[in-house]
Every structure is written in C-alpha cells, then in structure tokens.
Image (cartoon, rainbow, N blue to C red; front, side, top):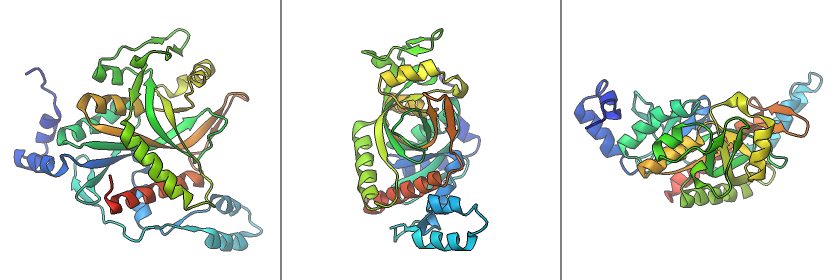
Length: 312
C-alpha cells in the first residue's frame, strides 16, 4: 500500500477504531451541505430568525432625521420566512464540526481556497457521503448579474492545479497571456452532477416565485475557479466572457474534480458578493450588503423545505 498520510490515520489520532466505524455507518450514503466558513454560523442564526430583512429600508436607517420612522418601515416590510419546522442542530463529529440536521442530512464548513477545502472533502469522502452541496460566495463580471443574486454552477474551469491532480486531466493554460483554451477542450472543465444541479435550480426557482417582492435573481452556467484572487486581469476575464463564463470563485473546480474522482455527486450554489465592471474598470465589493444576508436566509429556507419534504 502506497498511502501513508490518510484520512483514517488522521482521524485515529482523535478517535478509536470503533468510533470511526460508527461515524462511517452514520454518514455513509447521506447528503451534506458544506458552507463557506464565515457564513457557516449564519445557519444557526437562521434557525432563530423569523423574517428576511429588507435591504433598502435597512440602508435607510443610516439617516438620523427619520430613524424612528424607518425602523417602523423595516418592521412592516420584513418578509416572513415560511418554515414551520426548524431542526435542532447537533454536533456529531467534533473534530471536523459535522452537524446533524436529521438522520439523512448534515452540515459542515469549508475554508478559503482549493487546497484548504480538500481537508474537509477528504474526510467527507472517507466517511462515505453520497451527495455534497457547496454553498459559498462568488464574484461576477457580468452586466446582468447583481450582488445578492444566486448562481448555480454546472461546472468550472480552473487555473489552479488541485483539481487536475485528482482527475488526471491536463492543464491547458497560456500563463504568459493568461488565456484559457476552452473551446473543444473538456480537460479545462470540471462538472457538477447534472441531475443534482437541475434539482436545486428548480427548487430555488419555485421558492423564489413565492417571494415576488424580494428582488433577487437566479442564474445557472459554468464559472471560473481560481486560487489567485489578485490575478483576475481584465484580459483574462474578457476571454472568459467570450466563453460565456461570467462568475468567479475559489473552490468550485476542486469540489467538482475531487467529487468526480471519488464518484460523489456534487453541486455548488453561490451568492454573488462582489462585481467587476469591465467597462469602467471598477470593483464593487458588497460583502457587508444586507442583500447577501437576506439571500443566505432565503437559501437556508429553501434547503430546509427540501429536507422537511425529504425529496432529495
């Protein structure tokens, strides 16, 4: 046997053989949602929340003259979350912070960047999870997609080496001119599970139709995944646009490539947190925008509806 540094050997430092076997029996064949770590505890906040915040009125609270009036508006205009039954999360596996939503669905977090994300993915694969759904943030350089919108990925291209190592695909990238060769080249693409992606797109779209006064849009397509956040040059992004790629983040290709190599079904759902205007050479950062928090709450609501119906 070639492998020495393995998930099992890592876990044996903390747990007995019997405990590890119990985890495998509990997690094998189940579904887990893996949330980008800064927003992981938003799920816990969501379990105590009754309303979606109204981002326009919330921003108006910054004005001093009509503060009381605006507070009243916020209260009147909050959109009620339509979840009657909310679970009590229980931490099942303490080292990797894997929480139980119920007997079939679980929750964990992932770190920033593809290499750091592999730490939790290797553990989840070892435990035998069959479906992994990534929930995170992404940026866009599209004219149509806005901060707070939701993007579901069909797959990702990547300039990071990590997903290529797991899938044994060949990185085809011109590092001098920073251009991808995407046309007729599947080696540069890592795919989400088609059925899982369609399922979540339809469920989110259906739930969104019930909140007509809440202005977020849902998009789907391929995206760009990179570990090099400050190497997103204008020429690179313009080339991606020519290939109908309008969204960028840091872990998706690794998620898809890793899951493909382990025969795990995966998909990824991103909330748009920042936007690049290529015409004006401007970068709009919206990480503190209330619309992002609202979109997470809406997404968590949709997930719980799926879980409560047990339809995945």
